[in-house]
Image (cartoon, rainbow, N blue to C red):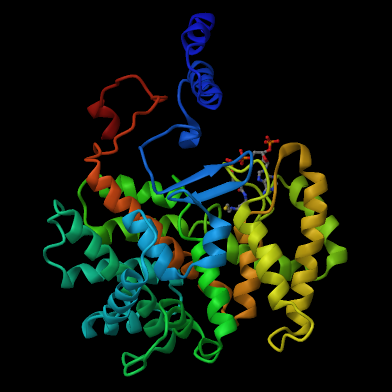
Length: 413
Ligand code: COA
């Protein structure tokens, strides 16, 4: 059978595709199902692409490094949603629209402020996104592309405001203030002092761009799965935020800083890794489902952003933060050696926490920043999914339970 399949695939010229199909077929034979849907294409998409062997990530064809070097949040938002980079007038209009749409209803603000402190900010965010539906009764009319795009922009604009209101506990937050860019507004929601410093706005802008999209990851799949039932954008994005909160996904950035703090100093890294591995635990911030080389986003943070932050005369860096950075560098060095044969490398969450810590953002908020970048991609996928008239996601299972059996009434007496 396998040789027949091999023969059938031999006509396929694209070598990579051939290997991919072969892998899928082998898994089907060996396991009968696809754990974690690994390698299974579930949709056609033109939003972003990853070449995991060569460490290449592109948004609509543009390499992530070029976008981070040359573009702003508004540029990338336009690109991801509409498929091409904006001309200056289009960029100006999008910025205006985002900043003009950032307000949220006073009742929702009251709800945000009343949420229990013990609720994780990611769940505060996802439940607040659901609340936004109350001001959009027509959200179930999904047939018009331009209306869907506009709805996405409205939601992107409101996400940082939820964070700003929650953190300041002030419903009047940012009222009467003007902002030069959307990234500046986002930084203002987390640190009003740094939002006045162009260097930090620029750093956050790049960080958000790096998080903009990442093909069919767990949260994007959630957007598409929930959206495919024709649930609202609020339900779809809210479920994506919940998915992102997990430590195997976006929640890893918070866990990495916790881990580095626990390790305490570079000289403790080796023993920490050994203990984790002995206990069968993963090291946070390392590994990736798709990359078999250094995650290009992590590499950009390491090479372009962190050196700016940890430059000798940086007033924002104290000895505690310096120690975390040194500990991370030591961990990277050991991991690159230790895990070379498994092709496990640092991912974006390994380095991003250090950037956010330097911005004096509390670790519990780290993943919300990830969400403020990724919402651009989520929305692009949500719009695309509706456009291609995707079927409702409804995978199958390999049933592994009882054969049919019957309730014995006497047993229940
Ligand atoms: N630390 C130690 N070993 C790791 C590891 C890590 N962070 N990530 C992967 N591995 C090892 C696994 O133990 C496994 O080894 P084995 O083949 O000997 O059993 C192998 O690498 C494959 O790992 P697996 O968990 O099957 O890969 P995956 O594609 O299912 O998982 C992640 C990918 C990202 C979920 C996984 O690497 C992980 O949990 N990383 C830590 C959390 C993290 O940083 N998440 C953010 C992702 S951007």
